[in-house]
Image (cartoon, rainbow, N blue to C red; front, top):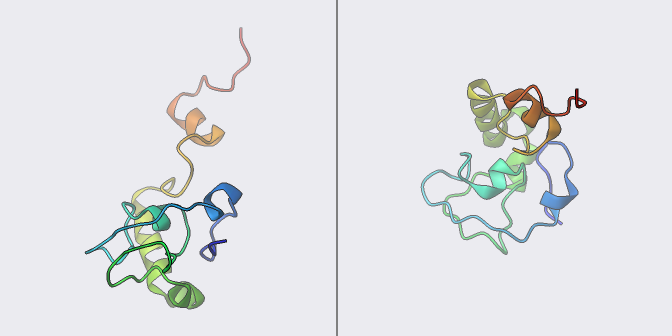
Length: 103
């Protein structure tokens, strides 16, 4: 199982994922990184990223680490950045009628 980043909600589906990233210039700290956007650290056995900062060692630094700093920057721009696009809350935000009982 891949470890979750501190402060991220546990999501069993994401933790068991075999997807990997191939980041070259972003140090795996941007939303285009599959692992970062899924709130997981990169797996050195699966990912073929370069100069990765999305590691267990960085996650262990907590709020002082590069991962936490990058998450804060992303969340300042979009508070829903790390939420599933299909969660009930996100769907209601886009369309307030979703989840309402039929009239």
